[in-house]
Length: 121
Image 1 (cartoon, one colour):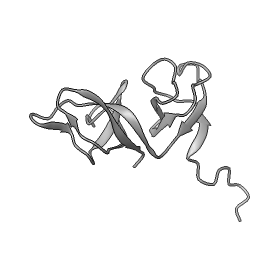
Image 2 (cartoon, rainbow, N blue to C red):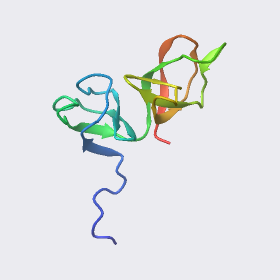
Image 3 (tube, helix red, strand yellow):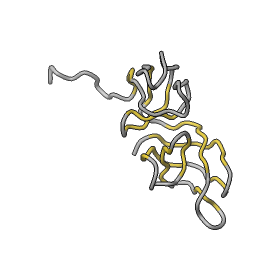
């Protein structure tokens, strides 16, 4: 057995998010730790800019706000689409975002809706 293992599964860790929807990462917020997607389980202890730490879930599915933009007609986000963290919202714009996970429901064009999202990839 390896003696240097820190966490068996590493799915919930106390970390400092590098990007969040606001200055302070709150419970339920999608966040990034560098390129690693997660959802805050607790409020961060301080602002993101000051390295505030909190418990982050790095897998699972959550109800998160997803913005639908881009596509010309019909659904802008379909179930199974890859969603990206872009500024403060999740969407399907891979040009400006960091890969976050998968939409498990659809969002109609030009709307922002809370849908099930699978975190990770």
